[in-house]
Length: 516
View 1 (cartoon, rainbow, N blue to C red):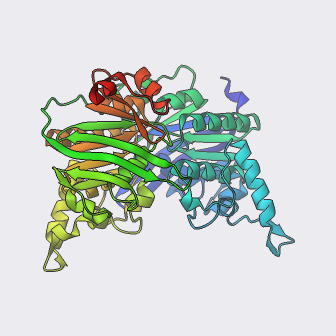
View 2 (view 1 turned 90 degrees about the vertical axis):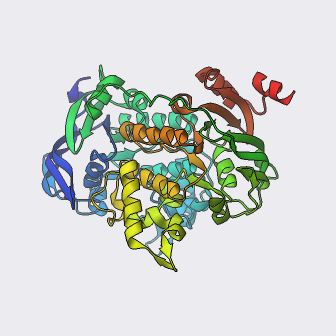
View 3 (view 1 turned 45 degrees about the horizontal axis):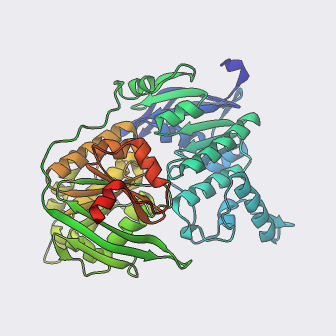
């Protein structure tokens, strides 16, 4: 691929960014080429998001320079960046849940009639046009808070497209999208490239990067360790430059006998507003020390099932048992008291309070265990948090720093630590690797295997075939709210899982034997 086909639109030279306690970027030199996809890859905490925030005007370099064309620029705000045609879709969605889709897309850039009042009809029309381009039929008047995470991701992408940016930064844009939605996004990216837009694309899905990228830059600990055309790049090259090792194997299963049944769900139904069921008659059991993978595509009802188990929907039907005792409480606090804990899919909305410190977030669900006579035992709290920070290898400068200062992967590990501090018997993990790099994944999956070896039962929800096959002792497949397949680690295959996830209410040979 000839570089002169894709002129450099933006350059960073000797870019350094220092935060209290850490150097996020070290003398980085980065070229952003126009009419091309510039892939940026690295572990969580490697400096990718920091570099993109610098380009988008969210953060400023401690030292170094940014050039657009031949002009040195100082991007002191997102408004500055927007004036130079720079737009960004953040990994952590930045939407207003109590506002409509159209209002979110045009926030701070409202369409007006003669500068007097907002032209809502025009905003709705332009929103519909954007949704057609993205091949979605999301209602412009729908409240964003009522949408699924994947639909919110589409709204975030539409918001950037509406700005007609010449440089577009996509930070984990497919993390909440289905396979079909990813294909639509790739078609939109091809259109933008033909229009000469320079795209920066950040993702932890390495095969996806190879498919979509034209140029690649690898960061490790704030230092650029590789930058080249994508021609000839394979997964091993990327991993080698990311972590200094070409292996990306999942941790091997630790051989240990399973204990007795620790959890059982019987005939779980979650009614929806259309008169049907989002979760439709699901029954399953889990043994102590077992990792049960729940695989399915977006809309299969996987997330709604684990949220129902956790007590998020008091109107749901069905029975749940922990260690043989029925969970009578219909609320989250009662389920935690029974020994259930959850790692939610959307850590920003459901797992963390961004304004609080790392310590405060980790102990939120277990304050009762850390208190004496109504007062928190601060020394015990500090020691407990320190123990989990070390166990989960959470990279922090201080537990008193705000949790928002951490990378996405380290925030996810804080959520896991918060759940483990309740000393659960059953851990529900909904897409635990979403937005986590290959190194952080290995650490999280290692912890999962160790916890299972200690007797914790884990229900692990994912749409990633490689993960579910590599980690699960047993796999259940869901589609349209129902279980459509069940496999052991020996009988599971990619073909079998995909086939089971594509049907409505099929019954596998193994299920027939169970029923009979």
